[in-house]
Amino acid sequence: MAIFVGRKHELELLAGELEQLRQTGEGRFVWMRGRRRVGKSRLVQEFVEAAKLPYVFYQAPRRASADALERFRTALATSTLPVAEAVRAGAGFDTWPAALRLAQQGATRERPAIVVIDELPYLVEADPGIAADIQEAWDRELQHRSVMLVCIGSDMRMMRALTEYPAELYGRPTREMVVQPFSPRDLAALSGADSAHAFDRFLIVGGLPMLAHSWAPSLTRHQFLARELADPTSSLVVDGLRILDAEFPGELQVRDVLGAIGHGERNFTAIGRRSGVANGAGLSAALKTLVSKGMVESALPYAAPPGSKSRRYVVADPYLRFWLRFVGPRIEEIDRGRGDLLLERVERDWTSFRGRAIEPVVRRSLERLLPDERFGDARYVGGYWTRTNVPEVDLVGAADQRPTDVSFVGSIKWRENAHFTRRDTEDLIVQRGQVPGAGRARLVGVSRRGFVADAGLDVGISPDELLQAWPEP
Image (cartoon, rainbow, N blue to C red; front, side, top):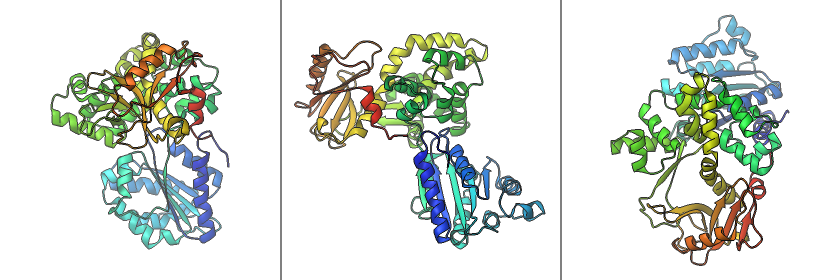
């Protein structure tokens, strides 16, 4: 089976489900979710082609149920399933249970059938009863047949809800999978870039496979952006629009709020002011939607007393964070052939943008290193701030999610050329004294360019070590 970067584990899980089917003769039901544009469809397409078995790959439309069923009939007729000829000859159905029962006809233990339904949430939007239909088809027939049913969805919230108790599909899938975006280490393997530059790439293209593949190893950041921003149809430009159109069709208020967060506003008041959503209830509802969909992350200061009003919001996906900050607000410049103006703006603001955008990536990377005796008993990593942002501490680690004793405090210096200095450590010592429960916490530094000899830290972390925290591709 061909393996492409970053997806070896997922392909092995799918192959394992197929092997179970062949051994037992019983059906397998794979439930796959993941953010938009992370390559779920391509992953499954790679799998079914490598399996060399009869299959149908159905791309669900955002259409009424009758239209969706007709499209499924067309997909069956043009598929490699044994039933395809009968469908072309006129075999039909008028319900989803009947459609799924027909799809598996002719499958054998030696040659199982693979039925893929991509973007299942589109069917649910038009017909909430589709989940019950799938349950009926699975319970009555498919689970006892030589069929592998794969349901894919990008609406993370809906896909979770459809298999949680007491939903109809609770307990039905034999394998639930979450396809994650590429990690910084995947990008390093794909591009051959050193660790520092791999993280820089990650802050622009995120973990989106198509974008990652489009950035050739030989291209510098400036060269890549110059090429992409000169083309209104490039993936870097249009993928952000596709994500927003798919996630929030017609939800302009939610998009305005997301745009404000992408611009760099982090607290409730500033987001409301920038987005123009003056109604507090409306703003709260929009933020709740964004957080529940996984588009935005919400956090309180780590080590802060419960009930703190210093909640912050940040765009979860690095690519979308870059797109909302630079590309989305300037689409008209790209459309009229002046991507060079946007490129100048990116180059001017890159250092400040990168310095803030790297913070959540470093926190996730460090947390993956834990437990590690160098960091005491820390298991979780966050940041600490006050409403006035004095102090504002990049890293706070502790054993509990609501700590009273802090294991370490840390500072991130993601500079292009300068090292982490003794002065940086002295500033961190001052900050340590302002973090609740951190009086004896260890001092941790993270530096893109390394450390001076007398930095005076307990632990110094380089990009190489951060990169190694992620799984090997």
